[in-house]
Amino acid sequence: MTTSETAPAVGGELLSTGVKRLLLDRIMSGYYKPGERIVELRLAKEQGISQSPIREALRDLAAIGLIEMHSRRGASVRVPTGAELGDVSLVRSEIDALAARIATPILSDKTLEELQAAYDEMVRCRAAGDIPGLTQADARFHRLIALASGNKAIERVFDQLEPFARTFITLTMPDIDVDVIMQEHLGILAALRDRNADLAATRARAHQLGVSEIFRRFDPASRIHQQHNPIDS
Image (tube, rainbow, N blue to C red; front, side, top):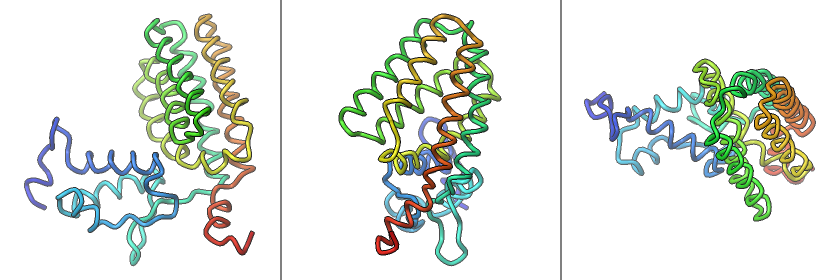
């Protein structure tokens, strides 16, 4: 490995960390689709770097379940089952509830404004049919609460779990009532504004439990299989 691969890149960020962030953004935005291969050599040429930091970034993403590594075919965006995604949201239900409970009494007015702005962005994206934008605004809403808790352990767990599910939400959107799910965010926000920690935690938990059930009913892996093999559907 060369010095340029281990030395910090711009802003003090390691090359592999920067590549990991790039890959994560591309997976979240749908640039790389579930099941699609990520060709190390092609990405290395595009970024003007060697394959070493790319391989390291892919290993990190494989560790959290976003990437699948194959001995012969290389890396591809992993397609989790509905049960796996349901399990993630089940854990998220307790993490989000705890974050809301801790954050409620210490929330700043600025954070409340940012939460409202994230919800407003969800509404705008919904009207425009921009599902990736909607899911990004949704993630920002929940992450603001995790950050507001001031608990680094909550923040770390949230950051590990949240990307695993977000990119696959678009696969279930055509079959669910998105407006009802969006409305649940207003309930959480209202409880936070009222400084009602118990209610905020209850609503945050219920929201993620509902998402968990959606994933279990509408298995993304089956949907992707149907998209790739329409004759089977």
